Image: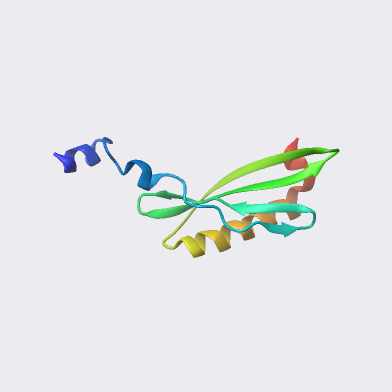
Length: 96
């Protein structure tokens, strides 16, 4: 029965498929990047948050990429790098 549940979308992992813990914050060019990968199909999906204080208000940009990794450490490292790339390419426009 559990095989059929997983096959048709019932009981596919529950909380074990939920968000992993967040990485340590990385300060980069006045922004703060946090990797927040989540487990999907036995791998970790690239997911993160970029924040910055703009005119006294904290702005936040969440991003998810298609990249998946077998280890949490790889997911943290690549997600932080992707966050830096977004900052370099978009700057404050990402909040608009």
